Image (cartoon, rainbow, N blue to C red; front, side, top):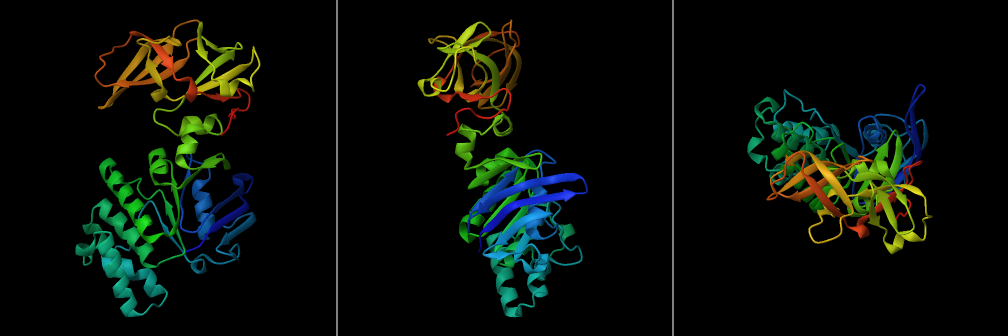
Length: 360
């Protein structure tokens, strides 16, 4: 096991900057997730750690060793790819043992590790089969098992669940978390799926256009995003971003006022224009409370245990507002609803920079 430390790592492909000045440290034994939209640089970071790409500048440490010039095969990391990359002519047992054989491990050690890994991943009954005889989920477990059998210092996973169907992805995600809790291997996981990021990570690194936007534990990042990009990327449905004006008491929007909590007032000036962020689950129908907004329902999306409403505030400013309501509520397009926004849950962003004006 080992820490992984990236210090001002950049990677350029010609004139294109894939990642710029990336700095973070994954402590020994932690599970970190790199997340962001396609093309943000997350896979480039993973490939750089693995040694499949070389950093243009900066320093990379695994443990206390600087590994910039160390070949991939000598870095003692194991990587699992999106496409499994199993050898089709080998059995499951042979695939699991391949990395150990390449390192000339003792036959007794190879057998013991293959059996142990196969049992832990529930694939012991598949050891004699070839990859073409396995389902997608079984192939993914074999790919994970091949990496685990090596007992590397660092475990790298590049969108390993993206080819699985929804139910199998959920099951395998839970197995991955249990596996990490049991083995304690330093793990860096790349995904574009925010649910995987939130459920798996000790800490999340959000990337955009090759730069780090925020590093935090899932709950902190969800409640206090560093900027609007993070706020709207994490969360499904995303955080509402509403253009408002502060009047000294609250935030004016569409002829209504959303009260300003005391903790935010000291940093604001009357007349200041802001972007106000609030999660859909922190907006309720104002049954017996003052209405901070009145909206008209544009789309109704039943989700089973709840219903998502896509609404817009009544003119003159038709701000888009996502609201979650109880599944029992029977609403239709065109209904008008008074809404109550929980003041303590408001987040304020600078309209020019997108940055959180009151970070935790």
